[in-house]
Length: 109
Image 1 (cartoon, helix red, strand yellow):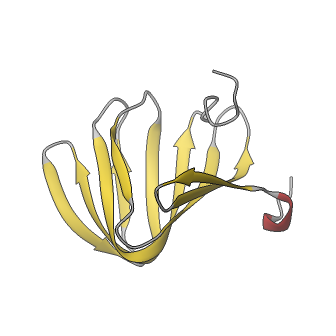
Image 2 (image 1 turned 30 degrees about the vertical axis):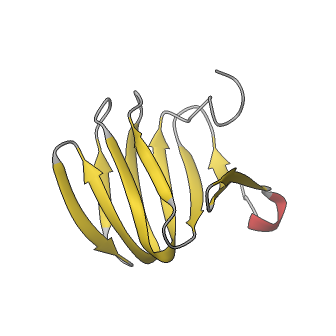
């Protein structure tokens, strides 16, 4: 399967955050998340495992009880059920990969 960004709508989540759902199937999902400087990804958890790759910008990320600053080229792993969130300190883009796919993002949960 080929997925072209031009065919994937961008959803404004408010507060300076927007999301573009890219490739997905039952086992995996990839999502691009764009943040304006100062935008917040609120603390939350979910049953999915998640990898986050920082494409650009700078973020102050909390995973569990640890907080670190990450920049372009850094990767974060979030195990199922762990609390996590971020603050964007320099406008940037994250590439999230979930397993299994996020049915809630597709309006199916």
